[in-house]
Image 1: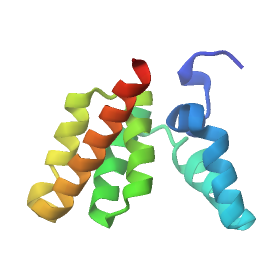
Image 2: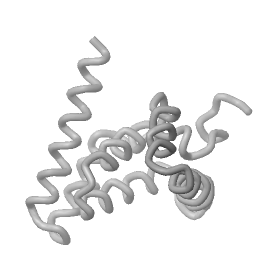
Image 3: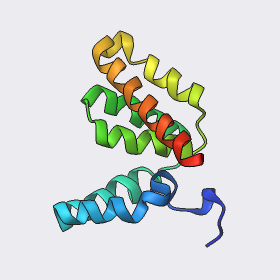
Image 4: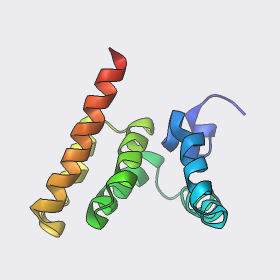
Length: 125
């Protein structure tokens, strides 16, 4: 398998360096659950060719804002950036949540984005 992100399974791109940690966390919760997430959500749904991975991740971020799922949102904010989304595109996707979800959930989503960007900036120093 090449090192080209387009040749990698979606979960490898999305999870990036966190891949093994995330799968181990899911395994520790329940091995069957981990298998369903890995095999169905990522290796089946995410591999569907109708949308590119960046678009899928931007949609996932908006959906996770709607669900109020901060840990999963953090994973997919990072995943969207790993899949080629820009900070501006992430902000645009989160802003689309306002008319449908309201300000509280959207603000919480932007808080997660800010925390992720600050952490990423600190790691680069």
